[in-house]
Image (cartoon, rainbow, N blue to C red; front, top):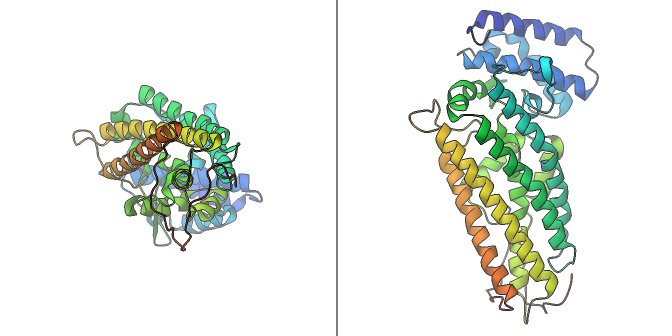
Length: 354
């Protein structure tokens, strides 16, 4: 139907799915996810062909609201419905059926377990002192889980052409209106590496544009990930923790702190690599001679991706300087830092473990 631009057929299919949803006994989250996934793939298809779905099929609006409420998520499909909650093989729901689309879906599926692990690790790190012997190896675990993101973006670069994404797939991710609100389609940007950023550096070393993007993007996340955001959005970041611990040293840094700074520098380098490759893909997909849209499917322009890369580089550079200084036993003293809420860090003996 998409290949033929058969909007009449898509309208009839959406009407059929609404009827099936009403007649089905949807009594589990899994069934609600499946119903939203099936309705959602038709929502995106209609919008791609210039039809606002709820205007064409008004009776779909209440099931969307009900399914969203049943799962504590937005009233339309997300990247989770499109990827992880989508069967493989002949039953795969897709807009085009093209191998490049299937590969992109599978790449996101492979990333989600590592992202979930990253958030669990970040939860632990948020309560840990940089002087703790466990801090550096725990950051190392976060580094290892983050490699999956780099591997995934490399595979997408190899298998999915910028022209295919920009001109064939991207139009299916346009927003739709439900109860007067616009909701973005199931964009890969909803895979929340930005929640890892939040704990590592972005909670207190951010800029307004990226903060706004975080606030807008978190609505598309799983309930547990939204809770993660609320727990950590005002935290002291890992970068700030480590640099303040180094600044507070009155003598040579202890070995645990030096290892913490080194491990965090390596993690920041990995995040910088991912952001660099991401913006490389985005530039090709949204180049003037290729792009059909000025913004990415997650709502961010390429200019914002550049800002995020610049911020990541700044924090990586800071950590590298401090880690090098710590290894030389020459951690630079800096003024006391006052955080939101008025907390102040005063100098302490560097060997004191929290």
